[in-house]
Length: 327
Image 1 (cartoon, rainbow, N blue to C red):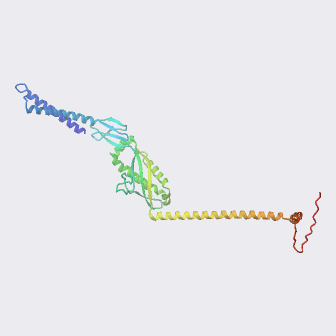
Image 2: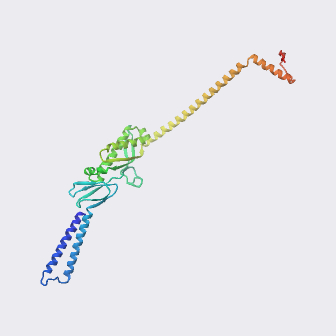
Image 3: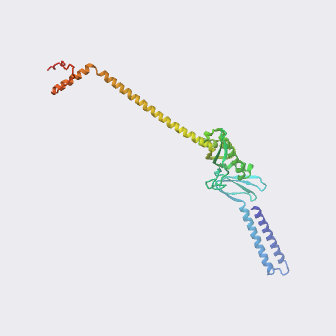
């Protein structure tokens, strides 16, 4: 824009100078006045066009010197020779030399997504654009799994100059640095886990990836905001074996529960039998011959008082010496 403004300004000045010289030359002719006609009209048009070009050049020059910066942006100011002359990280209007240019960096949260989209070749299944397909990793047992995830990150405003020096612009920075590091870390972390752990410790693996990426980016001006581990796909044979193992474990748990219930029932039966045996033993010991005889006498007395008839077995001795109660 600055070059165009400069061209407009120079062209306008030249047009004004030529128009004024032409008019001055005509006024210098004999008679001392400019004759009316097409030449006078053309001269006025040239003056108007020159003035318009000068005003346009000035407006464009001012416009190229002032820029507005939104929240979530940081800009590197670069001279026309390619040298870095500053950076701005605050919002609002800023002034620069009209021949300088700015390189914009987005410091808001950004994402890289690795997933096999179904809504199109570049879809991330959420209406966005995926960075690439899932990442194939290998666990400690040598089994390969496909990992789908989303990484959210942001750029520290004070680091945009360093990033520009190394990568020139944000797109190159994302393609050459961010995506490459994410792939490398995601491939490294599962090497520390067995196949079973990869299938069962998803939250732990997600945390390990976040910690490894944070450590890797500690001095780069990039912050890890979050890691969303969406899916881990193991080979079909592995998942089927794992499902069978889970079912077997469930069956073992059920059988163990039944065995425990049987043991409890048996223990309860033993306790009940022991209690009954003890009660019978106590009852047997309490029924001595003297006690039985006394019960017999008491029964006869009760029957005699009521005028009842007592029948005894043949050959028994029904006569019992009952002491008479004293009054």
